[in-house]
Length: 288
Image (cartoon, rainbow, N blue to C red; front, side, top):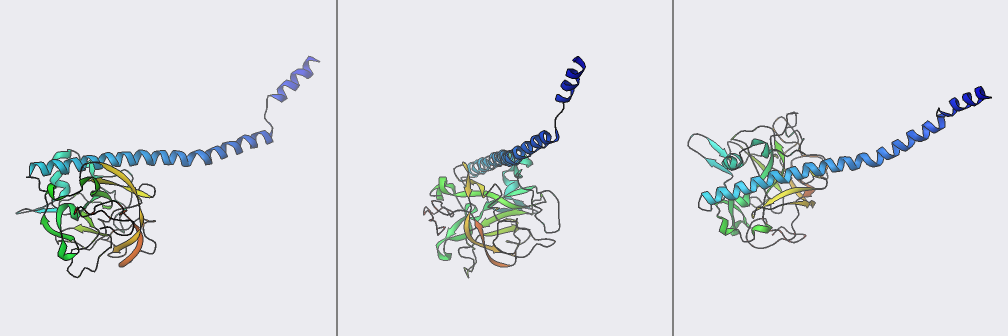
């Protein structure tokens, strides 16, 4: 009798195949539920780190202006023997090159390159220069002062960008909601630039990456605060398809294939924001 009971107890210690399958199925269901939550938590952490970067950049921008008679940081400084980008102009106030790189930006900014992005923030042309009423308030290139910004808490000056892989004084990333061309052919379009040896190089690296953090991006404002904003539908000016020296606009930002011309896609929001610093806030359908 004892032997039979002992054998019975030994059999009871093992799991049946059905019990194992049930346990595996429960684990699989829990993993399917929890893994997206963990992924979202990681992205939230990266978004917070990005906001910290932009905060430091914005404070560096303000400190630079205070040291230079309240003139804002130019898009690029044309020195005697070299060109200095806005990144390098405010670098002494930030003390770290890593601040220039968003942890969520893994986009290979060159169409044929897999090199890591080292500059992943873009600068508003309106923060660097005054708006011109004769050109539908497009930026003029003339120096701007802090006092000329009418609503600093509503004016975005830096944003997450498509980005560039080279940390180099000749590479400056900028964007604008309207072109400063006399023809005004870019009115209402989101335009990004990579400034090199020419005034505005026709590359897309400076476009804000409007969906880098979930369905939105981080923006730094002229008063120094940073905020995540959800993207809206609008028009994006695209300079060309990905190539050796042109940016690859990230998937999900455009509603059609990347090609030169105007493409509908995700753009920064406009409602209650003053993109050109003239004191007039945008609406849901108009940036100014």
